Length: 244
Image 1 (cartoon, rainbow, N blue to C red):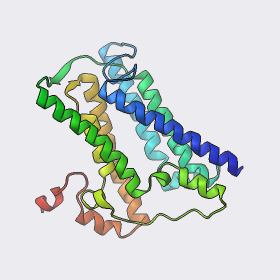
Image 2 (image 1 turned 60 degrees about the vertical axis):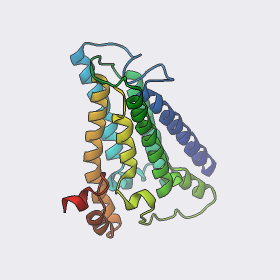
Image 3 (image 1 turned 180 degrees about the horizontal axis):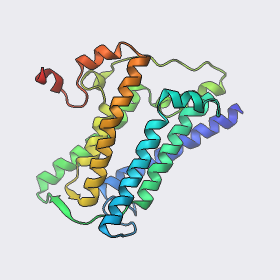
């Protein structure tokens, strides 16, 4: 069973990584057949909006519900605890892939930056978002975050390592640098279509809602997080200090 769990964890991570790479092309509009701006089936504006919002809601519900401690406690009575994170990663990746496959393009342009310097600056911000996002996962433990550490420890017969609260690098500047990276990838585009705006706004709204639940759970697991939250801004460097 330990070998099966380990292979399951590797496959889940592989699906995540493939989805992650596709997401770059999906949002950037290059290198993949289906993007946020085109390639998918066309629908009437109202239908397209309804389908796209339903896809975003499906991802948000799964992503949040399965991350809650109460759900994890119940879920690990059904599956081995070492497989819990890998299952979460796998289902999140599959729903995101479903979103890419069923996303309805919505034409109409809100802005279109053609100036060479402007486009270069925006693409730089887009790339920076992915870099910040990826580095942030390694700062807090990339392998634990995506389930590889759990299945590896299970394979070796080791007890799972308890997570401890730390403030590495980016986390000294903002509490959620991983989300900052995602927000940059959503909004940094030289051509903002209606469909892209729906995706960016919907995903951003989910992030702002998810942070509230995530921080509530973090305070319960790590009481010192309450002081950290008072001291460090949520998403914008220096914002809390400026407001004060």
